Amino acid sequence: MSTPTVPGTPDAGTPAAGAPPRLSRALPGTPPAAPVRLVHLGLGSFHRAHQAWYTAAAPDAAAWGIAAFTGRRPDVAAALAPQDGLYTLITRRADGDDFAVLGAVSAVHASDEHEAYLGYLTRPEVAVVTITVTEPGYLARPDGRLEADRDVVVAVVAALRADPRSAVASLPARLVAGLLARRAADAGPVTLLSCDNLPENGEVTRAVVTDLADLVDPTLVGWLETHVDFATSMVDRITPATTDEDRALVTAHQGYVDAEPVPTEPFSEWVVAGRFPAGRPRWEEAGVRVVDDVRPFEQRKLWLLNGSHSLLAYAGSIRGHATIDEAVADPACRAEVEAFWDEAAPHLELAGDAVTGYRAALLDRFANPRVRHRLAQIAGDGSTKLRVRILPPLRAERAAGRLPVGCASALAAWVLHLRGHGAPVNDPGADAARSAATAGDLATAVPAVLDTLEPGLGGDDALVDLVRERAALLVPDA
Image (cartoon, rainbow, N blue to C red; front, side, top):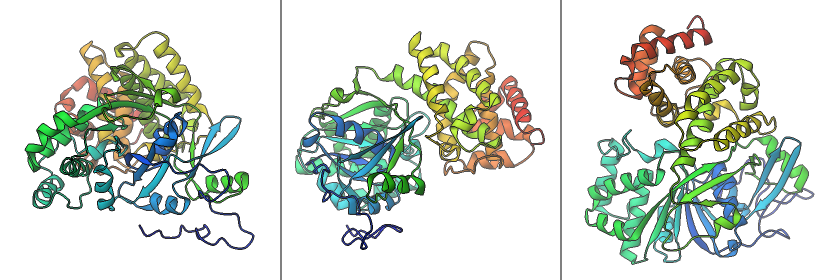
């Protein structure tokens, strides 16, 4: 691929005289590139702080290189290509930073390098495709099936029917195109491993891929059943966006220029369930928990961590805070988080210290002042996220005959966010919710917005009244 120079950094070939060198595998002591056996879709900070970090730490890392493709924007590929895929992981402890150069990413590509992607999928040695594209990227309905009537899906079906190697952009389409190429090459079995914050993400991947395959080439569906393992995972590591301050810190501390270092917290967890018929790295020896059922861990993380993150993103930004540590230090925000956790905890499949200890650890993680996880970053895509983070414990509480104040506070803050309060709205799927939120006063907005999350939810009069009350407490003149 062509590699534009990253602004503010020296050219990969010839640094200015006296300037620090650009990070690359030519520098002494950097890890060599491993042969590609893993493909990743959604190259970003989280993947590099999590799945790539675990792969680099595995004892057989030298045999498991990653070819990583960006999402819609090529920026990260443009930044990492001159660095041969290397980057610096900055682990932010409360009392200081640790730095490590990670080399698990052997090749980087922009998302539009479709032929390169198909080429990897035709290699028998490529055993696993991992995915971090965020929840909306799956084009799934609330029931987990493919949104087959969306214009983008209709267009993809026509394109792949006409030419199975057509360049496609959406996640389901890229997966189906890759699997068509793998079948044509008789390259053997492969595992698709979702690492996104979706309940039973492996089953969601299976559903959208199978549904699209059936529309494009029904004969592929049977091949999927015998050749594709749809694995499931739960991922957990807070990874804020990279800043110019992070880049300057790496240069000052490490003595080289890194265009895309990754700041992250010390904590990390990965729970995986799958068959992996073509093999995988020995991730379990790097700390990954391999289980038969990811669901209890996934549920705990989605509700307690992600649910409270969403609550803090909306309520905290409305109260003038910019980051998670600022928001959780606000007694009002902290009280809402604790109320939400009190409502969610009784309905979790895990219990005892697996919940109480996790809650205590979350407060410590949220309070870390050096992670600086921005609320505006977390606030994106609420129309998708709230369905899996807030609605499940809300439904459980309503079924038990209770009105959940914490859940209502999260919904109230989101309605206010859609009405222009707090963090800016960055949610391509929120058109209907945003229209409902701004079409009238708060009294009419609340039930209308709730109905966009789940049809009929706006008809729960007691819940609607509580959401209105919580919104009025947060913004009295809303």
